[in-house]
Length: 146
Image (spheres, rainbow, N blue to C red):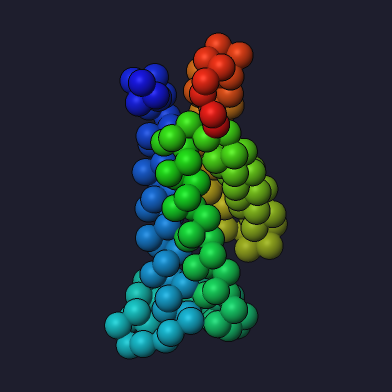
C-alpha cells in the first residue's frame, strides 16, 4: 500500500511537523493563558519571548492555529495528500525567507542561517522526484486520491 512506497523524507518531515505542533501548542497556550509553570519556559529564550509578549495574546492564538495546521499537514504528508505537500513547500519556503530576512534585522547569523538551512533542506527533499511522485502519481495509479 501507500506506506510501502512512502519516502523516508516524508516520515522525517512529518515527525518535525508533529514536534512543531507540540512547540506551537505549548507556546501558544502560555501566551493565551499565562501561568507560572509555562512562563518559566520563556526563561530559556528571553530574546524570543519579547516579540510574542509585545504582540500579546493574539500571538498565542496565531501559534495555536499554526499548531493545528502543522498537525494536519504532518498527517496529510503521511497519507500522501497533495495539499499537504503544497502546505509543506509553502511553509518551509516562507520560513527560509523569514530566516534570511531575520539575519538582516538581528544580525544573528548562527540562528538565521541554521533555520534557513533546515527549511532549505526540507524543501530540497520535498521537491525530489520520488517525493513529488508519492504525492502526485495519479497518472500512474488512477484510484489514488491525494
